[in-house]
Length: 100
Figure 1: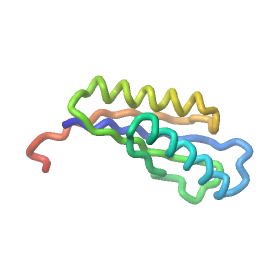
Figure 2: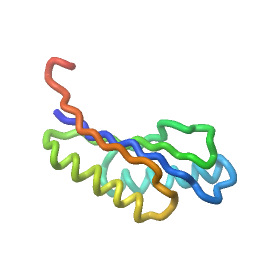
Figure 3: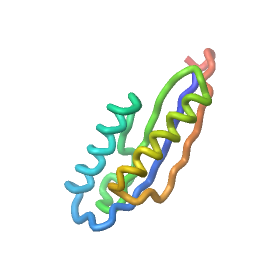
């Protein structure tokens, strides 16, 4: 089994509160889950109202498919124009049968 992991950091221009940040995060998370069937969570910068750090994860047996899925998800977020993407890292991790 393989796991595709993506870490994305954003800068939220003009954002003035944690409430606005949570609204943007929820919008991104909900649209990603509905479009790509991936798991999404806010994984860092929880109390910084102008920074957002999201993690995206999907599991499967095909590494190139997971790589493509993560790339499509990143492009999808970028095209939403809700926040400036400042960093993006994608990894595909092999999980062997001896790790369970």
